[in-house]
Image (cartoon, rainbow, N blue to C red; front, side, top):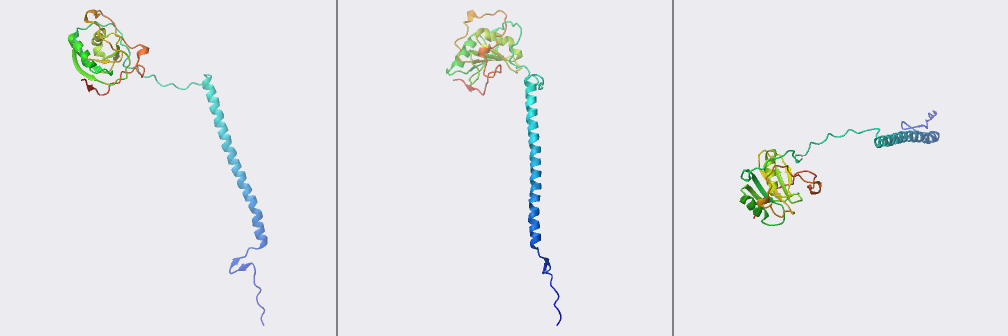
Length: 224
């Protein structure tokens, strides 16, 4: 009877059978791999920490240099001077009938724009628009014109004591009058000073909310 061929126990159906010694060797090698991963992670964390410390130190050094004046940051270019800067020069009193003006009421007093406009008309001023508006101006009255209306605005101010002059970008010689809460009355006609003089611009205590910007003038509503 023929002897059966001895079977290789490490091979089963063509696949290698893992032995106990091989399995133990695999588990013993695993801790070494995990240790290498931990070392790499710790090294990466160390590099990140060093970079963060370096950035914080650089920021502190820069701040101290700025405080001590050793380092100066570039300053922004100064903004152009506001259009409402008080015009220099002396102006002659312009005849009333050569002054075109608009009268606006920014107070809660109904009919104020119409009554003041009528007073200007009685003094021979040429009155155009008469309306109620909301404005950011605080004071007696704002007198507004372009560069071409300096003398006309000066004339209006001589009739409107305590008013503040503002310049805008209009090109004609018209003048706007915005009546505010402190307004009481025009100067009596016989007391109007017609000698040459300068425009009256706002004092610091009477400036509008945004320093020397013009009073805010939204769309006007017709005065009653």
